Length: 336
Ligand code: TRP
Image (cartoon, rainbow, N blue to C red; front, side):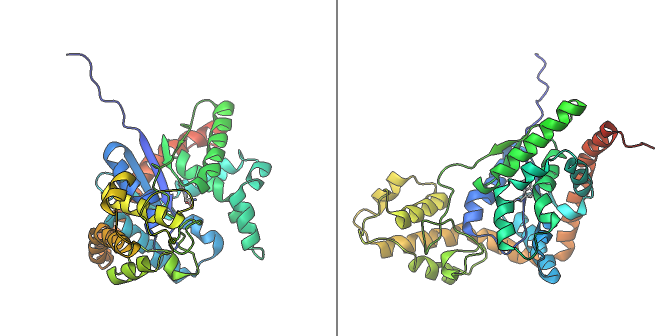
């Protein structure tokens, strides 16, 4: 027999901030892919609680939302036996590598991050250094694990570019140390828009509660929200330019059922928007049902959640410490 030593699986890493319950936009755009990727890759998924404190959430709320996000990650099917699932703040290597990488990130490039510029305007009274340093901490999250792929939304691509630039700069100065991470942009059709203004991305921070559907919305709430979704006056279910509302509903239906647009057009040929909206709502309710049922069990089992979090933190520390130790040595920190 030939030598068939198995290749190391590629490594995937992503973190999510624990700000309010994710929407179906976050789910179809990111979380569901996290779950799918965990079949084929070595995956590391975390709750980015250190990133969250840059905008000073109320402490009790942050604690609660972090726990909820962790439970939700397990509820969508991330398996803590197969993937590393952890809280960023439980693994000290993240903050430590971030400090070192600060010395390899340029003030100018960090100043050019569009998210930093946006947030500086939004939080004009508190442009703290953490907000500025946010992408460097994110670079540390990624580089610590030698991640090959980082599934991110379009809004995080610039941060990933910065992580690559920092890694490359470090490698050039000290020899090969970090894997250069590639962005992994999800399949098309996974970009979900607001139900009230389908030209805008669905956002959990939308002030209109009817604009977004949370993963934990009750079935009747979901149905109500879809019934009031903005469409157009053509009364024909077809995917076309200018039909943003219908296009969006078709994308959502496609994400839930796996059907393509042509199949959906056929299925609703001659039917009105009322029927279509109800079908989309029911598909979403069905898709979320197992997630919601598992979540309901997990969120009341703090002992189990903590056990998983502890295990995740231990594995994450073990893996990330290898990189941190190498980096400390390369930059010349005195070793015991
Ligand atoms: N900044 C990311 C976001 O808001 C979250 C994040 C933190 C992240 N660290 C990361 C994403 C590392 C990917 C990799 O979406």
